[in-house]
Image (cartoon, rainbow, N blue to C red; front, side):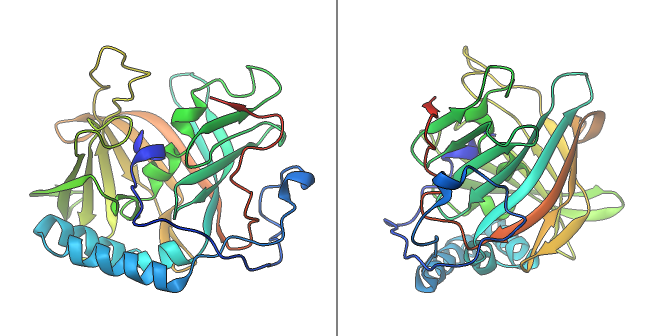
Length: 298
């Protein structure tokens, strides 16, 4: 899931114009002195339109890309995805083998792939990705018992398809249709050019209902070098997409179920994921995704 931090190579050089707005009460709270800013993040509409038009032209040029574009439209459109603000949600990842879970409130800048996570147990325990570096602020090593650099944007790449593959370095291949839960699915394999991100050997195999164009399942591997220092990857996983909910005009899953893949279908059920408190935030201060005082670079 290392696409989480590194996948999207954004088009052009972006500088944000501020527009002061009222903070939503549901936004996870951080220390007040770190939130104070004179303006909030705002993305000019003409930048969004250019990026969307470029994505449509590029994707529509191939059969595999056309499937992805249809899915983006069915899920609410790339224009809404980038124009609605930062994506905020609680992501509760619960392994069924007794290993420690990963549960945090997180806010993701989907335009520039920046992230900030806040512990559900102690709001002073936080970690994130500024777009250039990973950081951690925690009282001790028990606050987060997992690789927070790896996890900073991983949840987005588990629940944000098809929108998270509009960047450069992405290679798409149309695979034969399959039957899944009694319905015909279009299938697209996503791979990455050499040198793209931290783990270009990752892949996703995305399944979409052939009639509605909505995502139904994702197969993927993890080849993060910190986990596989001698190369290689974990066995392929099969992730079932749960019920979709509409937020800001975008359809997003409220749950995910992960299995080991067996003959292209779900095998042993291994992880339960609940995604709640989903919203888009347009009122975040400019410095929201920067390292807070007292944090350390990872």
